Length: 321
Image (cartoon, rainbow, N blue to C red; front, side):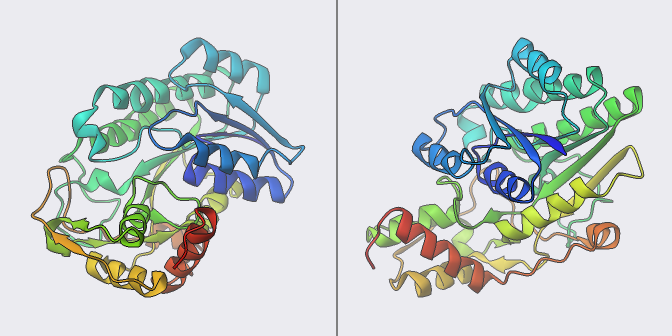
């Protein structure tokens, strides 16, 4: 297939693109390479993709209406995987406008491109954050998600509603994937594995909000990619779908830190703090729908995933234990 992957220099986008390229698909990768975090990491991810002759990279902001329309017109892709978004719960509290630009206007441009070019299937990133203040566990796609506790979560819920309206009006299929705490090699520096590893190795304290009592459904990047590939490869039987994609095995944040300490070979200095605005207590994915429809089953245990992350992190940044 010829597949458009937006956010191709991002954590999940680059990993997915690599798998698609390795099996022979043509990938059109789009990314604006913004400076939300270290651009050099994004360029290093891209450097793994550019040797493939079946990869084409276009630097473009998905919020650029004219640019996106021209891209869709020129490339004639078979499928779209939209992973471009302004991420981060805490950043949305201090920089709200960038979320409207990328996650709302940008997503609208993706939907318009699919409509105008008669794309059969749009797959897009939603988030476990949409569950907000929900307390019933595990989180199910049948649950009400009308209580977001961050602007980031609200934009992701908006994406699901926008996709529903376009599927209904213009008769193409949309599949939303609610990702649960993705981690692993080539990950994002604004997420806890990176932050904790950097601070621990520098003998600096790490901030553990809610006194480290959060539980997160940490999901290894290879399991996420496998799930997305399953959705790409099996033609949708309905026009609008939402799935959770997670490990379905939540771990306490303190357990995560202890495992990271073990593989780094250093103890963390822990700064225990109260709950932070925009955070939720627990995340836990009910993935039975994804298992039923695609045979998806995450394979990577937390210990193994963190071991692989630490090996990559120490090599990439030449950190000496």
